[in-house]
Length: 441
Ligand SMILES: *[C@@H]1O[C@H](CO)[C@@H](O)[C@H](O)[C@H]1NC(C)=O
Ligand SMILES: *[C@@H]1O[C@H](CO)[C@@H](O)[C@H](O)[C@H]1NC(C)=O
Ligand SMILES: *[C@@H]1O[C@H](CO)[C@@H](O)[C@H](O)[C@H]1NC(C)=O
Ligand SMILES: *[C@@H]1O[C@H](CO)[C@@H](O)[C@H](O)[C@H]1NC(C)=O
Ligand SMILES: *[C@@H]1O[C@H](CO)[C@@H](O)[C@H](O)[C@H]1NC(C)=O
Image (cartoon, rainbow, N blue to C red; front, side, top):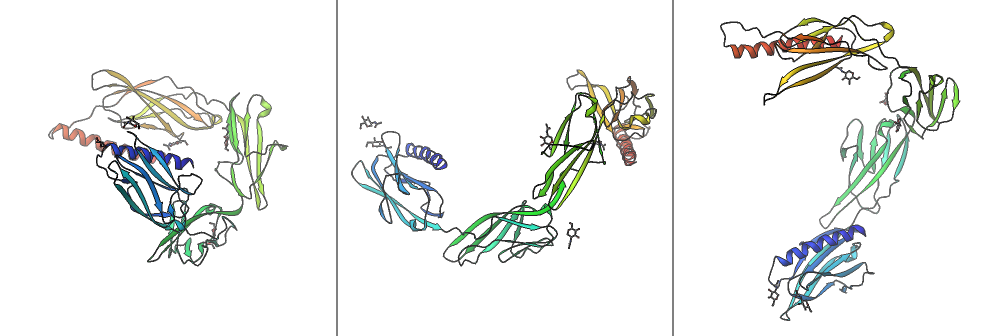
């Protein structure tokens, strides 16, 4: 109903716009379609109007259409500007019996009659005789059934996860067959919504319809996210919270059980938030997700986080005209370093001539130096500093050191600008390759 009302208000606006822009005594309809096709059970409204006309009336195959809103098909007066009216014909739900011609008539100021007609065709919608929820086990082939009611013989098309399967689709995984879709070797990833569409086109009519089927795949629980380690090491600093997550997929849904240092505690949720406000909160947390088909367990080791020590011995390993390679003294093993972070700052000049600090940062996921900063400007000073990273966090930065890239070396003989470009491109490629190599290590 709400939608219908909004729709009619929009119709009214169009009608007024049309009426003020036209000055002959012509009767009109909006929307302008004179031959229309509507689906069974859809809503539909058409308004009839015209300048200097009155006494509007709609007449259908079954006679004059009442203005009484209790009828499924009725008409409603549309007030308009300048004392004029139009008349809106409303089908709350189009039915097959509504097929036929509809006439709107009105009288002009001069007493002459005006009329306009539309022809309504109603298409039937195919109805389905199909369970909206279907369930299967994993690792078998499953035939998702989809049948239409009556003696129609339609063509089927299926959609699932933005993939479309048509008749005669015979891929490794899916085939559209009469009365359904065959899904081979179903896994829990195949669960979800499938849309089955059916079409039937004959010389006289065209019918279609669609239905949604929810495929449930019975499976033992599976964690939604992968976490490295068993137990998974989690570092917390004092008064911080961590979210221990055991989100999982399971059919039927899994029951959760939790324990801390082998003592069960009650928590029906798939996650548990721990706040490290006292030392006894540290230790081994275990979650188990279980259903009738199996269970899975994840363990978390909650460890007090500690800052790694500030790196020492920051120095330059190599310099080029567009790169700087830094090194540090290898870190303490107890700090369990996973990498470093370098910050490098230079003064840059805006097009307007103002200078500003250009700030850059680079994370290295390796503890093996040297650490290469690339794509730098030649003959330019960079202020660089480094910090160490472990799983718990970051160390302090070292004191900065200032490093100047080399000027570009120009050989005599060739045009300097060309060669300048060539040398820079060339050395860039070499350094990029070297960095890649380092990262792989
Ligand atoms: C309606 O009729 C009046 C008088 O006959 C005329 O002046 C006016 O222009 C007409 N309006 C339109 C919109 O045709
Ligand atoms: C509307 O009709 C009333 C009386 O029927 C009349 O007084 C008024 O002038 C009309 N207004 C317009 C804009 O035609
Ligand atoms: C079915 O899929 C599973 C996992 O995707 C695979 O291990 C198994 O070999 C497949 N079975 C067949 C018959 O293809
Ligand atoms: C904790 O993680 C779960 C997902 O496992 C999420 O639904 C929940 O909103 C998270 N809670 C907080 C407070 O971050
Ligand atoms: C380093 O690790 C972080 C987080 O794991 C990742 O986002 C980043 O892309 C990695 N960087 C490189 C250069 O591999």
